Structure formats: structure tokens, C-alpha cells
Amino acid sequence: MGYPHASHPRESAVLSKHFGDPAARTLDGWKARGGYQALEKALAMSPADIVTIVKDSGLRGRGGAGFPTGLKWSFMKPGDGRPHYLCCNADESEPGTFKDREIMRWTPHALVEGCALGAYAIGAETAYIYIRGEFTEPLAYMNAAVKEAYDAGILGANAMGTGKRVDVHVHKGAGAYICGEETALMNSLEGRRGNPRITPPFPAVSGLFGKPTTINNVETLVAAVEIVKLGAAWYKQWGRADNPKSTGTKLYSVCGNIARPGNYEVPMGFPFKDFLWDLCGGPLPGRTIKAVIPGGSSVPIMTAEEAEGALMDYEGFVAAGTMLGSGGVIVFDDAQNMVKQIARLARFYAHESCAQCTQCREGTAWTTKILERIRDGQGTATDLDTLLDIGESMTGKTICVLSDSCAVPVVSGIAKFRNEFEALLPKSRNVVSVSQAVA
Amino acid sequence: MSHGPSASGGALPLKGAPHDHHDVPHEPVFTGARRHDIDAILLKYPTKMAALLPALWIVQEARGWVSEGGMAEVAALLDLSPAYVKGVVSFYTMYHQHPVGKYFVQVCTTTPCNVCGAEDVVNTFLEQTRCLELGATSPDGRFTVIEVECLGACGFATPVMINSEFLESVTPDSVPDILAELA
Image 1 (spheres, chains in turn green, red):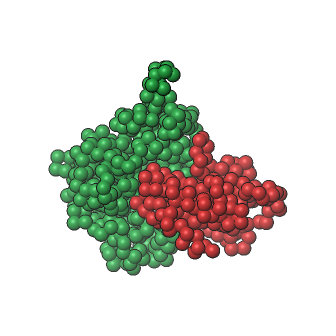
Image 2 (image 1 turned 90 degrees about the vertical axis):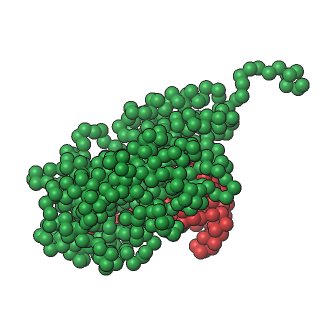
Image 3 (image 1 turned 30 degrees about the vertical axis):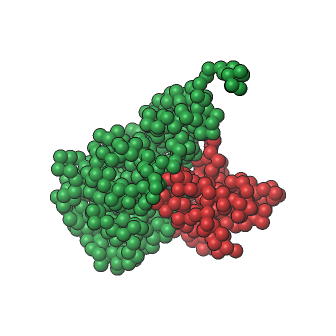
């Protein structure tokens, strides 16, 4: 079930079934709900066997990129004599996304378990959970859960009495969207500015403190717990029969102009139209839905018509011209001006650019300036062409994809809502004579 | 980091206050219990530098902001240069490089909240706290109001942070009660 709305019968609550239940937050409460069985099972297995189960499940990274989790874990080589690290990316800051926040608020031990399990599977003795600094409530619950797990001997030098060392530490961020980019996250954890790194070397070769490292999203690690407990075949029950590339359930955060905002968990392949209208209640009274961003602000904007035809999995959203991304669904109704809202998104990216790459530093700033002058009726006839030109120079040319992410809503927004931009631009460049104007 | 055309971001220097707070001698932060805290934190990492963000948080929690003296103390503690520490401090939006009001109010106005009326919420805070300008501190020194980029609680528009308190579903109508609670 999602939160804060009541559970909907068409949801498949696996990761979210204890949302809204404060009793699930404590160690005793988590154990009473089957907690730490997966970790106990995992610690009795070989790391390679755990990786195989996760590979077989088809689980893909839930942070946005959708990279196969088991494959990512298999890049790590346990036993090579070097320290290995797991980083949990809990720097949830993608506009529209607030699912990891609920996982940490309601089931903090699920994440402790996922971190311990994931660390063991990749041959790491230490996992760091990097939580954005603004998440004061999730930070408090995660710190309490980690302490409880240490006090109970679940974590530490003799994890669950197995003689194996598993440490999990919470690390508090300090305000920077870019630290959700995995190489920036590692730099930030090391005590540096959160500038993304040039890859290769990839983190599995040289990551945190120069050692082999895997970075996983909160939702990914929590899903791995259920997969290890109940098996790959169990997880694959969800998904379209004709699309084996997307399996399991996915948590979606829904916000903006929608009747019932909140978190919803549905199987891969769920019809987006049913999702928006049946589960989320459709538009606000008297309004119609105009546009939807389905996977956080960095994926292409869809018209309402396009959204109604989409299937909710990695391939389904690509077929509809966008991406699943983080699962942050932002709904815009007919009362919104798309130019104003796209300008606001551009401002977000301009503010959050780490400023390493010129295309991003200058591109996000100029995109914002131009969009805001169009919004304010001060645009020029060539502004749309200029925006598209800047967008082109911001795509695929920088160390990380923040720059691309700024261009995406601008380019897709102009393509789909060009009339709203043109309505704010000078109608014609023809000179109107005074006599005509007076007449 | 804060640059470019954004109006949101960090606080401005305290308006109307003498700008001599940088000259006040620095009282060491890492003594007693706080020294014990940072020693425990250092055990979690293989390098001293990794304790930089946690150490800066301890300074800000103790003093309300991170002064040049605080940066120098952290630099000495972690074998870093003060310039390096300042470079890190200035990257992250949550460290205050100037004193701020007793209540630091951050209103999310990014797109998902914006379409739900967040601009009205921030304007109501600006008026009712008499800050009048984003990033400025109210004449009584009690409030600083800023716009913040996505707080990650978009389904609970509009989220507002007041110091470390995280409020959900704030509307212009609920602002007077929130401010009365702080009185």
C-alpha cells in the first residue's frame, strides 16, 4: 500500500506494505514482520549464490538508470584482498520523487537489512548510507535502526553470530542534488565537493576511497531483501508476459495536480491510464490533465494522450517516448502554464549544476534566463531556436547527465507545447504603421 | 552549489547588523562531548577527510553557522587546509557562511510544489515574518526565509523546513499557526 492514501486493491504492495504502520519501525516490529530472515539466509550462502539469485530475478536499479542489479554486483570480485564498499544512494532529490523517503521513514530496518545483505554479496565489510541532509526524519529513523541492529549483534564484527563483519554507517549530506549522481556521492562521502568523476575507471574498479565500490538505490536494496527471502521466480511473477526485461513491482511517487498524491506500488507493465485515473483519482475537480512527467523531472514530458497509452515498465515508457526513471510522476493540469513550469525546472538545474563542465554551467544558466524572459513576455522571435540549439550543446557532452537532464524538459516541452511558448512571443515582426494601429 | 541566475539558495549576510562577526575570536567547538563525538565519527572512515561533512555539521549545530574560525578549527582537526575546507563549505547549500535568523525557514518551490501553489506559501512567510526579501533576516533577527530546491516530499506540497523541523502540506492559511507555535 502506498502512503498517505488507503491501499488500493490493484496495488501489489511488497516494499510498501508496512507504510503507515509505526510498529514496523523498531527492531522487534521488523522481526515480527519477517525481518532479518533474508540476511540470516544470505550470510549462510556464498556471495556468488546471492548474486545469482538477484541476477535471475531480473531486478534493475530503481534509482533511475535501470541497470541490472545482479550484473552490477557481479562486477565486484570478493576475496581480491582489497577493501570493498557498498554505498546506498539515499540522496533522493529528483523533483517528483519521494519513495525512498517513505521506505526510510516506515521500514528503516528493511534498508539496514538490504545494506548488510548487499555488502556481503559484493564482498564488502562496510556499507555507507548517504542520506540527503534535508531528510531529518528519515535520518533519525535510520540512525535509530542502525544502532538497534548493532546492539542486537546483527551488525558488527560478528554479524548475526556468523563471524562475518558487516558495518553499516549513516552519512548525512549537506544540500546538493548532484550528490545523487553516484561518482559525486562518493566524492562527497570522501569529504570533497560533490563533483562527478570522469569514468572510466568505473566504481567497481576504483570507487570510494579508490577501492571497488557498488552504489545502489534504497528501493533496489530493499527489493533485494525480498528476492533473497522468497526467490527469483517469486519476484518474476510480476511483469508483462511479453516483456521479460522488466520484472517485479515498482514504487511510484505521484505529485502535482492529482486527486490523491502519494506513493503507489504496482507490478511492472501496469497500464498508466488506470494508474492515473483509478489509483490516483485523476485530475482535481473541474480540471483536465494536460501533461505528465512519469519518471522524475529528468525524463521527457508526455502529453495526457501519450500518458494514457503507456505501459509502466522500462520498455513501456521508452516506447511512449520517455523513461521510467525514478518513478516520480509529476502531473500538470490545464491551469498550469507549461512555459512557467519548464522555466522553473530549468532554474532547478541551474541551481544544482556543480559547474565543472562549461556546457552545463553556462547552458543551464542561459536556458533559465531565456525561458524566464519568454515567461515574462520579453522573449524574442529567435528564442525557441536558441533554446533548442543550447539544448543540443548540453546533451551527451558533459561528465554527468545533469546537463542533459536540463535539456530534456525544455526540448520535449517545446516539441509538445510549442503553442504555449509561441503565445508568449512577439506575434509578428512586420512593422505596423501608426495609421493602421490607430484604425 | 549556488550560482547562475537562481534566486534560491543560501542566506544573505545579516542586514543591518555590524559585519564584524568574522573578527570575533573563535571559541573551540571540539571540546568535551563534541570532541568525543568527532572521535567516534572518525572511526567510521578510513580517511580523516571523510569526516569533513560530519565535522562541519557539528560546528553548525553548535554555533548556528560555520565561521572562518570554525573552518580553520575543522581544517586543523582533519589535517586539511582552511582554503580546502572553505571550498567544500561553499559547495553545499545547507552550511551557513553567515549568521541566520533564529528560525531558518526553507520553502520548497520547485515545479511539483510550484504547481500546487508554493509561491503563495513563500510569499506568505516573507510577509508575516517581515523578512520581505528572500535570504534576508527579519529586523528582529528571528527569521530568515529562503526558497529551497526540491525537498523530496512532493506529494505533501508544500513541504517547509524550519531549522531541522520538516513540515508537510503547508498552505498560506496554515502559516499564521506555524509562526504562532514559534513565538
